[in-house]
Image 1: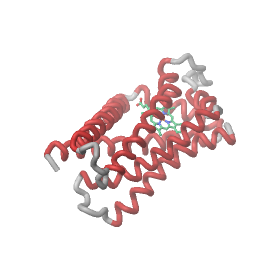
Image 2 (image 1 turned 135 degrees about the vertical axis):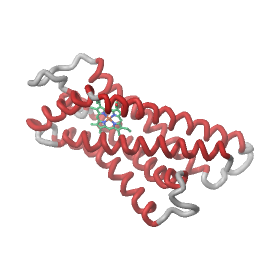
Image 3 (image 1 turned 60 degrees about the vertical axis):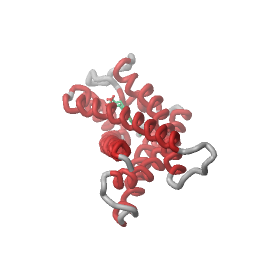
Image 4 (image 1 turned 120 degrees about the vertical axis):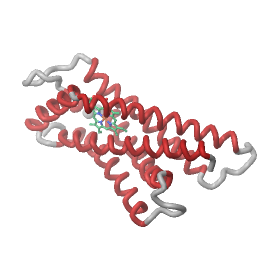
Length: 217
Ligand code: HEM
């Protein structure tokens, strides 16, 4: 592999790794939504309010958007480099099928993210939303209304299948790019990658489904 190729692969692995950390923290924070409503509403609104005012979170937020931009841009560059090298009449070389499906799964996740940010982030920061009993923006109420909409629940849960597959394949690839193993993944990576991938995707898919089926409890 060329030096440029190694740098691009490392950039994909590092930006992807940061995004996995973001997903873990985001998922754990959002699990509050599954608590009984009298506890969940004040807790979730206070949590969102506190995050909004924290400098650490502002820095983490910039890093998150930077990582998303880097991950998408470098994936585009890698795809373009591979296309340039492969004559149109040649058969798809081994590994390219995987790279192509990773791009497609990544694109679904990106489309999901656009809908997701419009539904929650945009409304929370720029929308005219009600206040709760403590005078904080009622983001919990926004989530409850959103996950009462069948199409949004479908978008959120089906996109998590794409995210799970993307992570299941991306995590071992990232570990390999960072030199954690050579030709074949170690038993630990081979076992931990699908577990982590489907824990994250399952955690995110459970929230809209739970709220849609049982509402606030
Ligand atoms: C179904 C489970 C999810 C729920 C309930 C949820 C909820 C939310 C809410 C309420 C916000 C706005 C909070 C704020 O701006 O302070 C938000 C922001 C965000 N969400 Fe989610 N989310 C979920 C899944 C996901 C997934 C799967 C991804 C990524 C693939 C994601 C990526 C983001 C990003 C990037 C932001 C903006 C964060 C920032 O501005 O720093 N979320 N989410």
